Length: 375
Ligand SMILES: [Zn+2]
Image (cartoon, rainbow, N blue to C red):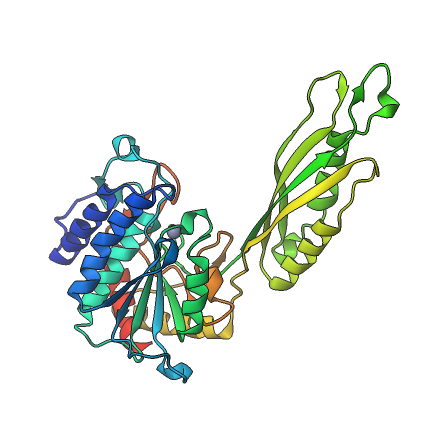
């Protein structure tokens, strides 16, 4: 492979990305996340944004948004979703340093999603103040990687105040496809309490929490409907106190993925209605749906077609896909047309080989710029 010197546009993208990557920002460290946000807020102010700090650490930057809530949907702003947290703990840069290898730029949190944020700001700068109708609202979440517990309410409110949502999470690895749907995600913890007894002398007096957990595992995993996109997996199970004791305690944890709200409702009702086969065992059921499914809608497909037409003019083809993992787009898709995957191409989200594809990145920044001119 021949390595050419990156063009000026790419060098500027890389320089900004280096600044954000050098500030490690695990979801568990709010102060570090705020330091990343301070840098991004500086970029936003340079572009004349009105900036707001919301409860829980979320920030909002408004570009050309008229004061007061718009009554007409057509007058509402374009919402752009970003997050400043990463899955990587402090110190990761030592083992996984910033490194350019041919067309690949490696580093923790680059692909997911600091490069998406950098590309967004380069696109916003390229608009030279010609904001889309209704303006642009950029929402910066501090906790997307842990399910957005504090930012969710802000995201949902912003969706109601906006006409479309664009998410600068990375496109699909390798194909660089945009994301027009995502599964919803849920998790449950079942805690079983049985009756302990000597396994040799009085087994009949015991009621096994582990047996109940095993039965629940089989019953609840049977709720999966892979054809409909519903998967149910017991990923963790614990229980018992000693090998010669009928176990009085057990817990299990379930991972749920659904493609439709109807399926989410069906599985949720069935999990909550489950009761132990042995009436002497009791169960407590905690959890539920964390992110609703991002169902592929007409409005989202229309946005995608707009993006695809732009890409064609820029000289490349674009595809789209429905993916299993959730994002903050799952919170806006039930409210407004949402197009996801508008960040930087690459691969290795949450993995050692996380990287951005330098040969493809500038094209995707141009795509976002032109989409913002037309949306
Ligand atoms: Zn992400």
